Image 1 (cartoon, helix red, strand yellow):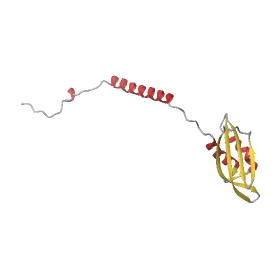
Image 2 (cartoon, helix red, strand yellow):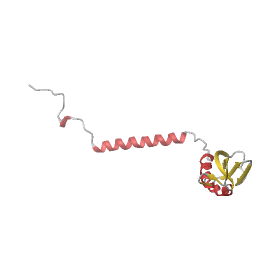
Image 3 (cartoon, one colour):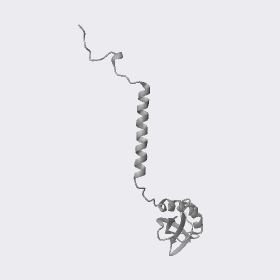
Image 4 (cartoon, one colour):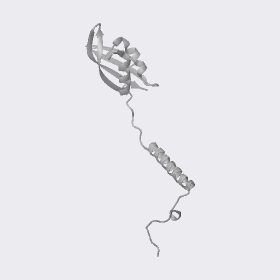
Length: 134
């Protein structure tokens, strides 16, 4: 009388050859890579606003200790992305300072509230504006 335990002996269980398993994993990897490549090519690329990050970098470039210096405004022009033109405008206490070429109407723009050194020992609130275009 044989007794059934519900388990097959080890030699009777299903097994996969290692080479077949590697080929299957490779095929799945190629399929996923192809799918993501095609999906990326078909999705529209959103327009990036480069002015937001640029105004933050320019603020660090024109101000030491968090206070913007109008005389250092030309140094902030190096904060612009490569291959793009940049105009910086600093406004405070009824005065305006500019650095860079005149921007076209289609330029990306962003503003940032900053503290501005308007004179020795005189700091006033102001706005730093970056306009970026190609």
